[in-house]
Each structure stands twice: as C-alpha cells, then as structure tokens.
Image (cartoon, rainbow, N blue to C red; front, side):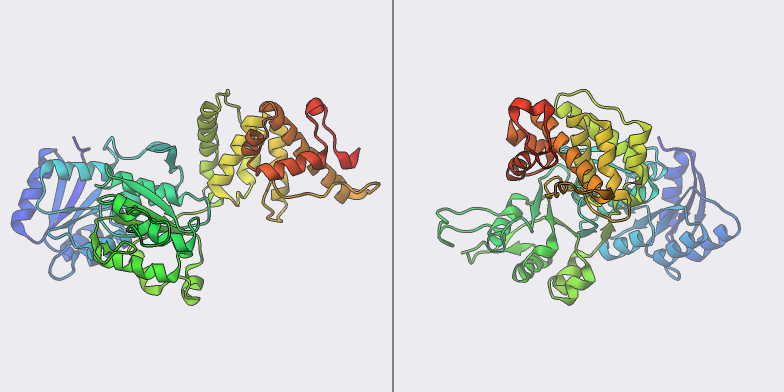
Length: 472
C-alpha cells in the first residue's frame, strides 16, 4: 500500500478529477484538487506544501508544462507526476527536462497509479535505495551521492520512454553501466541487450557487424549473416564510442533511427526492426560537429535525451563503497581472502584524482589484492597527487638510476624502479612464474612484462631476492 501523503491533484476534466481523487482517498491520502494550473500555483503560493503533485499535461490556459516549471521554482524539491491521455514523446521528454519525477498515461488502473506513487515516495521495494545495484553480467550501479541519485532517477524515467539516449562522459565513468541500467528498467528488460564498440571494430567491417550481409556480398562472404540490429530486435543496442563511426555509416544509422529499417550488405530487400538505440561517447561534441566528424543531423536525432556521467573525482563519496565492492567481487573471483582498507589507504584513494575513473579504480584494487602490499598501493597513488596529472601506467618504460648519479631526481627514479620491480617479482611469484598470468594481473602486455623482467634482472631462481640490474 502507498505511504500516506499530501497530494495536490490538478486536472481540468471534472470526471477524471473525481475518479483519481477517489482512488487516492481509498489509501487515505490527504488530497487537494485544482482544475487549472493557475489554481494549483495559487494554492502553493498560499502555503500548500504537497508531498506529491499529480499534474495533467494538457490543460487550457497555463498547461501542464508551464505549471510544472512554475511549481519547481516555487518548491524545487516537490515530486511531480505528469498525467496524459496521449503518449506524446516530445512533451514527456520536455517534462523530464523540467524535472518531472514520472508520468502515467490515462486511463489507468489503481494498481498502476499506486506503483508510480510508491516509486516517487520511495516506498516501492523495486525503487533503488541501496548503495550497490547489481545489473547482471558482472556490472553494478552505485548512487551514493546527490548527482548520481539524480542520474538514477532520470534513467528510471527515460527508460519507459522509447527514445534514443546519448550518454556523455570521460572514459571509464560508467556509460555502459548506465545503458544497462536503462535497459533493465525499461519494458525491454527481458529482451536482448547488445553493445557494439564503434572504435574497436575496423571501419570497413563495422557496417557488416551492425547490419549483416548476404552471401557473396564481398570476398569471403560464403553465407548470409544477420547483424547486431537484427539480433537485437525488440531489445536494446548500445553504440559505444559513437563519435568513432565513419560519417558514411552515420548516414545509414540515421536512416535506421528515422525508419527502423535497413538493408544488409549485398541485399536490396529491406529489414524492419524494433530496437531501442542508446549511444555513448567521450568526445568533445562541439569540436566533433565543427570538424564534421559527427553528423549534426545524427547528433540531434540521438540527443533526444542526454545523460552526463560525472567523473569519479566529482563523486568522491562513492570511492569507499566502490573499493569495498571491487574487493569483495575480485577476492571471490581469484579465490583469495579480501584485504582491508586502512584509514591511510582510504585517505590516499580519497584524494587521488582517478583520471581513469572506475576502470582505473577497479584495476588498482586488483593489483592490491594480488600483491597484498598496502605500502606499495599507497606509494602507487602518491606521485599523482603532486599536481602533475601523470597517470600510472605499469607498461610505460622508466629510466634506471644513472650510475653514480645523485640528487632527489635520481633518488626518486630509483625508488620508482625498485617499487615496480618488486611488484613484478611478487606477481611472478604469485603465479608460479606463469608470465602470461602475471602480465594479466599487472594489467600490462606480455611483451612489456618480458622487457621489464630483462630490464630489472629478475631471475626465476632468485625471484625472492631480485635486484635492479642498473642499480647493482
């Protein structure tokens, strides 16, 4: 049952006003009514402070959108549910941008109304109130700060409106996670979710990857193959790094967005699909549009609704939660006991800027778990706090100390080399000198690991007493 609340109901149809008021009073809600936007605003100006507003979208005089905008100015924190007899996507999106918490299409049943009210009041068990929300496929969503809770609310709302969504943000901020959250909250949740990384697939293969091909379409095409759009029919597709898609292919994608149809390579017949398209990119949009790297018409078609994912440095409240969650997940994955995070290590993590965002943080926890050295973990973060902005890269070659060299510069270089050599030796020891596994644990390439083993003179027979060849 819904939580008892003070509700302001606004609708210009007397019959609908009585019907909804009756439904609300069955659950003993305290209901105030208004038949126009002007009356609703006047009630609020006179001191009415509702927990929730049910607001008709189409009304004479001041319509629902104007009333919503004015209500949000008078009471910024008020939750507003829009009521509409038509599923007008443009108006629904506009209402979301103005701050509507949800919407419901008339006519509706009491159970449907109760569910929407419960979600807005936070009493629905499915309403996200925890710290970590599992999404499946080893992905999870965290909303422990105000801007992420707002994003979660927007995702919940836009999930029910079948429009494209463009997700913007730095690399590693969780754009794919947001896409999976939208899919999970949408009516398509039981259907297929597919991700296509437009930057990872060569330009000449991306079209066949997305739209498929017929036998004989090109050399080597011995049989027909459906593309991702066909495989994802009735589901959701995420086009990651959309800014890397060739302009010629962007035109074909625009056609799919407009008409939900396309042709396979080598075919003249048309394939019709029903696919929800989500897109993500970390590019500078104005620059990409100016340089024609991104088609303007495609951008405005994808930009029906935009979600800006903030970098980790702007949501530091989540860092302790993310550290513990990554540790719990990775310790289970590698069958190791989880390691604690001391106040010193938590402080080092809290002040570090995390240029690689969640991806970098996850890799940091993995290294800490494998190497088990808190001092080394803290030291790994220290150089990044000096304002240089340098990002840690285990594969980046570092110079060895100059023979006979002195001074702080040489000493710092020597300390870095020693710490790196120790980390490599520990990883090799942990994997019984399986160098491919060690390279994976250290997040470097196999070739880079071999180079560093030679560089630092780390020998298997003396792996616990390694030495720096340049400093010996």
